[in-house]
Image 1 (cartoon, rainbow, N blue to C red):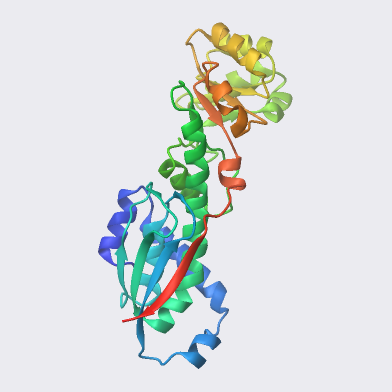
Image 2: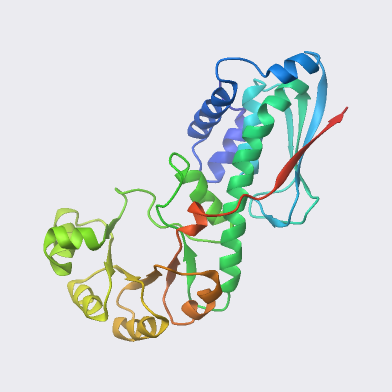
Length: 294
């Protein structure tokens, strides 16, 4: 099965690979059916009955994944469902807002319901959490950024949701940028040795180095690091790090950060705050599905 061209184009415009989104959806629906049929819907719903299904926000939040949800209905019905997208991703919506309406065979709508809600609710939860952090940082030089602490096979979707919430993506994979962490430093014999090894082996790759102390910061700055991750620094240490750095590298705060101290960290002068909780701990946005006759 393939997506309708207009849905595929919309996903592509948001930086998502339509074919991979389609594959994920088909695998998810197949998992839900487990080689059989929706026995409840087959027993209770006439085969040719058609209905409308509204996806409705049950809470205030920020949307992400509305076109992913649209793709679920489109694929399952083999393009026999009309999908009306009523809000765009990144919108701040109020409880009761109709986000999407799908019109088609009732059985198809009910098969799709949980898959669409799981994906849409999860991604909107990530966007909602990110938006809360981004608002805390307004008026500071810092921006909120995600990590690689993502759900297996959902990384691109979750990082898209972070963008919808006003955040910035860190590296997408192990291959597109280098991040020298404590275990690399141990293996290489020191911070400078680890940095030099990456720079020499992959000269065109941006290199970020994790440091635990201000002395390590001085070492990697002298070595020419592009970006430095300040791991578990206090706000006082972050301010001193900004002074030591003097604009030479991009500085990123990480480790134990909470939204309660986000503004204080942002005001230290660091460029980014890396928060794994955006993707690994975001609460699902409550979105419901209401069926109605047509």
